[in-house]
Image 1 (cartoon, helix red, strand yellow):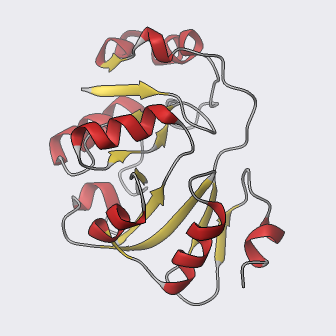
Image 2 (cartoon, helix red, strand yellow; image 1 turned 120 degrees about the horizontal axis):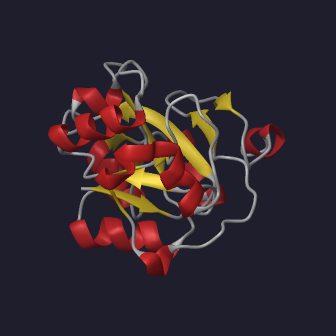
Image 3 (cartoon, helix red, strand yellow; image 1 turned 45 degrees about the vertical axis):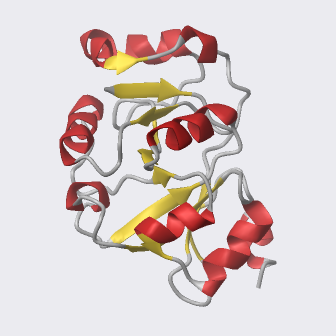
Length: 185
């Protein structure tokens, strides 16, 4: 089941990130390039350590910004499907500051995918009805709980930082400005 859920940035699409069939179904639904990795949402850094090699830099970034609007790219462990990492050997780790994704990851006890709820190369939308309309007939594959439905405030997506080394490499500036990331050093 592909679940549409709100986050502290934009709506996300979640499946069990350890289930290769679910990940492939998500990739097909979005029409996503199979060479683009998909981030995961976890409940805390202890859970992140189960799926990624967490560096000292990642710990510093997490202490400053998580839970929040940051995705930390790390070396993935072998317990994630290669389709999720798109053969890169890396995974983006998110700990959203929102109760719904936190409830989902705690309920299933595994990470969920943390990819924006849009068709590949289409705009990211802020309401459930607009999102479902964008997916058209494929929206029947998406589960959404009406209790979670809300118009999300305008927000940039998460800032994405490669933290595999000792210096952050900003992949995408998002809700957290580059300067704030660099101040962590």
